[in-house]
Image: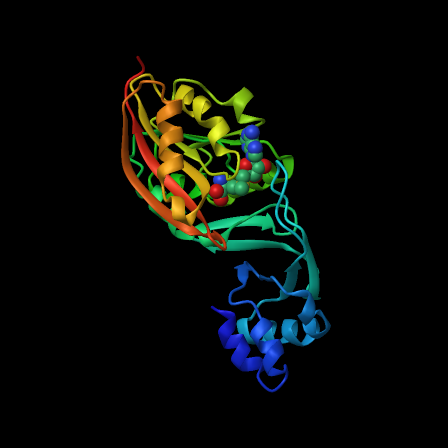
Amino acid sequence: MELTTLRELLRGTLTESELRLLPKRFKRIGHVAILNLPKDLFHRNQEIAQRTMDFTGAKTVAINEGKIEGRFREPRLRVIAGDPNTETVHVENGCQFRLDVARVMFSPGNVHERGRVAHLVSPDEVVVDMFAGVGQFSIPIAVHARPSLVYSIEINQVAFNYLLENIRINKVGHILRPILGDCSEVAPRGVADRVIMGILHVTHRYLPLAMKVLKPEGGVIHYHETVPSRLGFKRPVERIIRAASGREVEIINQRVVKRYSPGVDHVVVDAKIGKKK
Ligand SMILES: C[S@@+](CC[C@H](N)C(=O)[O-])C[C@H]1O[C@@H](n2cnc3c(N)ncnc32)[C@H](O)[C@@H]1O
């Protein structure tokens, strides 16, 4: 739901100029609503939070206090109203994800991408999810596609513990093999029909590794990147071709996952990589 509706709800409470400062959207993860509240609206945060809870049924309202940064992609949130507990269960694409929204990142804006990939996987595939998080890609793949094996690699102990919990509650322990560690060190080599590279900003550094993780006869990689909208898919495609170092590359799909920031898109490129030379 968009905050334009909340804008209507707050008409009469906030001034016209304050209403214009309200962000367009907010995130909802389980029982928690997360707002990007501009500083100029801070003094009204309790009224805004209360309306958000009344209107959406969220039990907790938190605000973003900075960008998600660092290797572990840890959020910076502060609860401003409601239940202080930020551990929740979020339901997406028919799967359940337990997580603490204040400790691990979860981007509800990627919901369609996660559903899309889950439906591309064939039953006998081996998948390697190089940046598994709490299982955002691995769990729906295991639930909907039932591949022979999914290796889910995660470096952050907190996210990894939730990954283990999510494997348990979605009953996919016979398909998912969770691995704690840095994928550059622990990813199995030469095993995958499909590699998921669900991370941003540093993805290109791991492309040579993804090529090694694929089976010698080749397979598909799903490569994510943030790019200035005016550049389209040129840079990610060039990077994939360079990393393939002579192996055949067929771009089978490319799409914008979401607007990342003004003028910058989060894109994904699906590339079929040919036989190892
Ligand atoms: C941005 S989150 C994305 C999770 C999920 N792939 C998605 O797209 O929704 C990236 C995750 O990769 C993990 N990570 C970062 N570097 C890693 C590495 N070298 N090896 C394994 N996991 C890593 C982070 O801890 C984080 O949980």
